[in-house]
Length: 284
Ligand code: PSU
Ligand code: MN
Image (cartoon, rainbow, N blue to C red; front, side, top):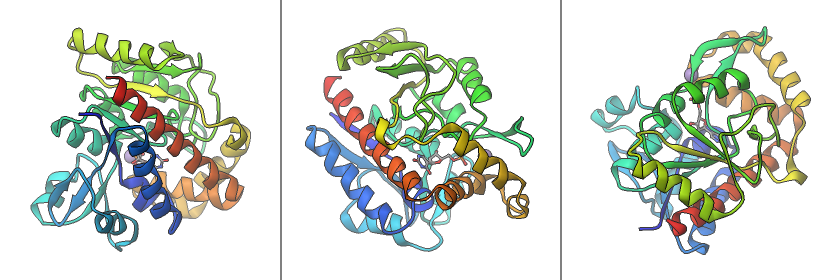
């Protein structure tokens, strides 16, 4: 089965209406155009959904009170018959259980930074779940709002292979480059498939993280993003946030401060990743 899992947190908490619904539809068509099956994942009325109807997609984009679902709150929401949009962590777990081997997202979560620019204990469950779900995740690297050095280091500790798609350095979401190296560079789809098959033959439990840089014309400067993030982290609003609200808050601040370019870049990289994921799924 050439299937590509797509997450829903990016729809409910990552992007504003109506860009989120346009994106949800365009990601599904991009995957289908490559001959793969789009499988958008989330929780609706206590049920795990791994394939959305048009109405399901709309619910993830519009329902008030759609929770952000990671592993910690997944059993509670299912037990109570609730609805929620899954993060990368919850999406890969559920996709893996459904036999889906490839997933596409924008940027993964990682180690957050404090207002002083130092790493925090707040670390995304995306990292630990990547360490125990043998799937392939296509992304544009960790989000540029994170502490990138600590995030790169954690990926290494957790044994997650970072593949650079036509790049030697790990990209960082809206930013084309970080100073940190990937583990293996691949310039052809078949090379990526070989790495995935090697992981499978070796029976390693970790995900393969394929990182592709945002298309050059849409890239934002790291200096600009870091300036917005530092200011946002020192704002009084940031002091009130619960840990899971930090990522949506920072993405929103970047869009408010840097304008349409941030939204366009986010959409462009998501679409690029969906296409790459579909090509990989077909090659497997
Ligand atoms: N990619 C995007 N936008 C997003 C996300 C990914 O382009 O909003 C979401 C993913 O669902 C990812 C989550 O798992 O952000 C990370 O949140 P946290 O740092 O709270 O784990
Ligand atoms: Mn967190």
